[in-house]
Image (tube, rainbow, N blue to C red; front, side):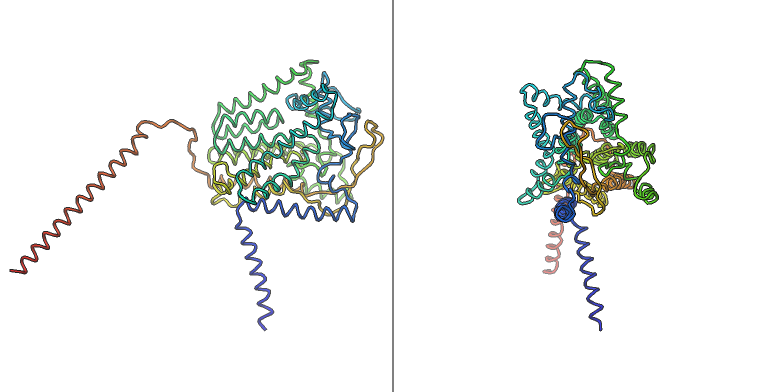
Amino acid sequence: MSRPVEVPRDLITAFRQQIHGLTEQSERTLLLGIVLWTSVVSLVTGFIYVQYFSIDVFSSLLYVPQDCWLDWDMNVGRHCFSDYAWQATAALRPDPWEHLGPPNWPGNPYPPAAMVPFLIFGLLGKWLHWPQLGLFCYLMTLVVAVLTPALWAVRGARGLERLVTFLALGVAAIPAWVAVDRGNSTGFLAPIALVFLVALCRQRWGLVTGMVILAALLKPQLVVLAVVLFAARKWRLGGIAVVGAVVANLSAYLLWPSNFPGTITQSIHNALGYGAFSEAISVGNVSFGKALLWIPDGLKVLETGGTLPDGYLGGLRGLIGYGVLALVVGAVMVLGRRIPPVMVGIVLLAAASLFPAVTYRYYLVFVLAVAALIVRDPEGPPGAGIFDRIGHGRRAVGVSVSVATAFSIAHIAVPGPSFPVPVAGEPGVLTAFGTSPVITTTAVVTPALWLLACAVIIVSYARRPVRDVSEDPSPVSVSEEIGPVVSAREAAENANETVSDAQKLSAIARNLQSASEARQLR
């Protein structure tokens, strides 16, 4: 009679033991395991969607390949890597911010410094009368950039783990291949973010300052990373980072002297006006605002029967990300040195990348640098990650960051209704276009996971801060150098005195024993 009751109990106990074993895994093991298993599930579900439902899974995970909207003369089959093609074409014009394309297209939102890579490779293709060569060289450089964190992390692994690390952080990294597939320069953020975080681990503040300036040249909003210097109370270096980023961005306008200085206001106008409402509510948007408006958007969709009214919560959609960014910046400034600099860097990378109202999936490329540090600690032995050193007693911090990073790297096509997206037909003929069926992926949950991770980090160090000490490498004073020597000498003298006293006591004991024996003989 007891056997039917014991079997379920045994199953429950075994299940609990499995869950306990999973939760006891290190953060690096958790990250690699989630990425690999998620990738396997993505392959299986992708095969089902393609084979049985005719869903374009690759376009759902990346982007539609038919993107030759203009006759750029650099297509590879039906694919034009349109982010590169558009910016390379604009960079080779006297004024890159003059309108390009149909009247309903947005203006060029790129600042001048961010267009320099496109200018370099565009000029290479133009001089050789071979635009595809410039594109090929650009893509190869971009591939090396997005694989840099994986290659760096592999150096800290041992044996077969090297292959596992490269597969998880390189081959399976969807944000990296989204950036390459689009030809978007955001992929160059991966090595910059890696050097930035490693420099924070080693407290190389000058190098941190340089990486902040480089990141701000690539994407101006990344000047927010300078807050890590202010949080560490490096006021002078923080000021240098901000001023250097501003001066470098303004100086880049001189590369296109036509219509200068009017190009400054024109480019700012284009940047502020970029991002239509349809893009803000699209499944490709991974911004904080999109995550925080899931519930009201879902309720409105149920109310209207499947669509959001044009402009619904449009003002809030554009401002909510700035509110999150302000809260994050304020929190790390208040915590200051009571939170490790590398954790501040991770929080600021996430906030600066995901706060704009329209944030495409290639902005998740910053997680590659975070993943590299989770797998390899620059200050630790081989086979150890950063949370093996600074994560003691902060399990929630390590798990939340590892889970957010893992699901930002590997995505799964989610079961649900498909929807058509427009694809280009004949290059340069805007009236000839079709559609491709795509579905939602798990990338939509990544901003919510990073919101949670940032909150867990801030709350953890607010409740139990690290020791608030100056981290400046100051020279050792003479008294500090002599102090240990004096202390050692005093300890040696005390030890000698102790030995001498013990010898005296031993001699007295022997004398007493001899006197006692003599008394007995009498």
